[in-house]
Image (cartoon, rainbow, N blue to C red; front, top):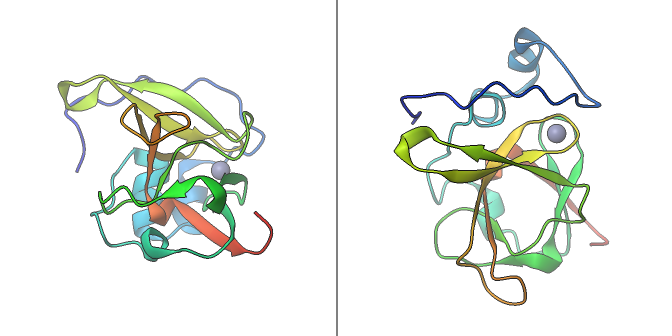
Length: 144
Ligand SMILES: [Zn+2]
């Protein structure tokens, strides 16, 4: 589940900051592993993968809106996938060098929680694929 090398310590200051113990108490086990320790959920396990209603996807750690149903697409990977974040302030990118590969991690811009990874094999118009862990997000049906 985890790489041999942890990513460099994140020194960004976030609006929502909690101790590791506080996060562990607040989150489900799987959400904690993904959001706080860069874990990856097993594919095809999140109900959000098949969520096709109109609405907003929010960070499971802090409720920050991160993605809209408008940019969600079926990537076939088993992970909820989007071709753009909700807005430029929604998420942050960070370089992940675990697993001996360089990948771009996507984090919640509000609490720093790890949401997933970014790849460049997505559909138009951006060509990007935000490959997210459903357990790291919640869904609020309604306006998108
Ligand atoms: Zn968050």
